[in-house]
Length: 164
Image (tube, rainbow, N blue to C red; front, side, top):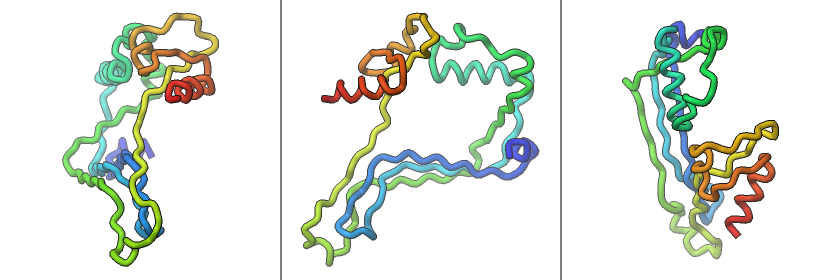
């Protein structure tokens, strides 16, 4: 698929962020609150000369400062990595927000209705068991709990305890 996109095939990229589950008085009217974007177009291949700088910029965006700590990709890794660019020429966005939209006939039903909000949250970092280095600032700042777990399981437990 990536080779086809790099060759000029048409692309459709869809991104959806779920904000909540909408519970209505009838099963038919249950819904979701969301923000969604659809991008249409043709990808272009990023040149081999531009690839290292774009990958470094991407790493810096994820974790500022990380690009100066991690080993940059070597020649073989760069050759094995395809980077595509999709210009924002044709796109559409849609948002659904608010509560249930029940039929008038269902309004008298004795059923709870409303929204179960969802939120994306930074969880504590999970240290690789083979890593003995103290976490850098961007890792310590990642989660509001400021704790670094040693495994994914402990990470989930730390968050659950902090909400209690």
